[in-house]
Length: 74
Length: 378
Image (cartoon, rainbow over all chains, first blue to last red; front, side, top):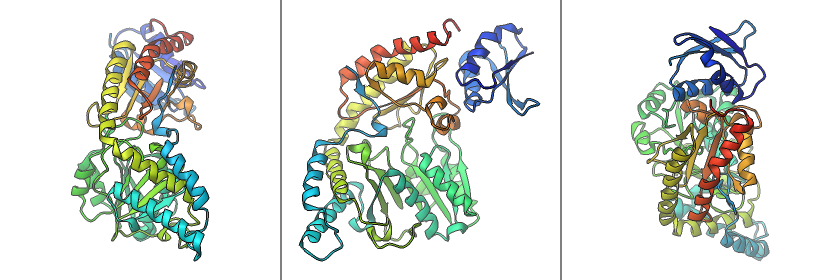
C-alpha cells in the first residue's frame, strides 16, 4: 500500500497523482489518496469507474484529512 | 466566431422585451396602486403583463405575482408554502439536486427549527418517486414538497406527474426556472417559480400560487402583488418579461425540436472526439437545450478560459469555478466526475454552424488544458 499526500492540492490534481502512481503498487494492492479538496471524494470514485479500478472506501488520516482507498485491478 | 452557450444563466434581452420596456418607461412609470391617470395607465400595463404570463403557465391572473428575480421567487415559493403550513411545524421534502436557492431556503427553514428531508437521485440525477413519496409520508408535521421540473445543471426531467400522483393533497413547489423558456409547462404544481432571464426578459422572477394552496408571505406585511412580494413592482421590467415570454412561447415547440437535435449531436460528438469524457444526465427524457459533460484530468476553470479565448461562453460545476471552491452539489449527488465540467445551454440565437464550430474547437481546448497539467498518456 502507498499513501499519496494531496493536501492543499485542488482537483483535478489529486486524481492526476493517483493516475501517476497506481502502477507503483501490484495488482490487488491499494493506494490511499489523502486530499482535503471537497471535489476529491466524487472524483476519486469517478476515476475508479472510468479506469476500471475499485473504490474501497474512505477513512480519515490522523490529522482528520479524508483518505480515499483505491485497489488496483489491472 | 464563437457563441453564447450559457442560456441557463440568462440570454440577451429579446428585442420585443426591449421595445415593450422602453414604452413602459414612458407610460408605466407611475405607481399602479394610485388613483390618477398615469397610475391607471401603469395598472393597465401591469394587469396585461400578469394576464399574459398567467395564460402561458396555465394559471389565473390573480395566482401570478412578480418577484425581483428568480432566486427571490424560489425563496418565496418554498418559504411561503412552509409558512402557510404551520411554519416551523412543517416538514419540507426536496430532492438533493434542487437549485441552490431552494437548498438555501431549506436551510433557513431548518435554522428556524423546521424539519427537512433531502431525497437522493440516481446517476442520471433523477429522483426516485417512491423514495420521495415515502419521505413525504413519513413527515412529522404538515408535508411540503419541493421538486424541480428539470435539473438546471444536467437537464434531466423529474417525474413531476408521478410524484404529484403519489402524494395527493401535499403542496408541491415546482422550480420551473430552466423549463418555462424551453420545454412544456409543467402540469402539476401548487406553487411555481420562474426566471425571466432564461427567456430573454430582464431580471424578473415569477411566483405563482394556485388558488386554495396554503401559502403565507414569509416577509413583513405588505399589500403589493397580492401580499406575496413586498414593494412597488418594477413595472417596465415586468412588461418586458411578459412580452418576451409571449414571443418565445409562440415558437417554443419548434425551437425545442431544433435544440434537442443540436444537443443530440453535441452528446454524440463529445463522446466520440474527446477522450476520457462522461456525458451526463438523461440522454432522452431531458430539457431540449442543455447538455453537461465532465473531462478527466481537466481543470474546469482553465477549460472555461480556453473556450472563452476561442469565443465560447459556457458554465461549469467544477469546484474551482465556484466562489466557495465546492463542487456542484448536483454532480456530487449523481456521483459524477466533477473535474473538467462544462454545461452547454442553447437558445434561439445559436445556430447549427455555431454548434459545429464549438465541436471543432473543443477537443483542442481540452487537449491544451490537459497538456498544461502534464496529463498526457495517463
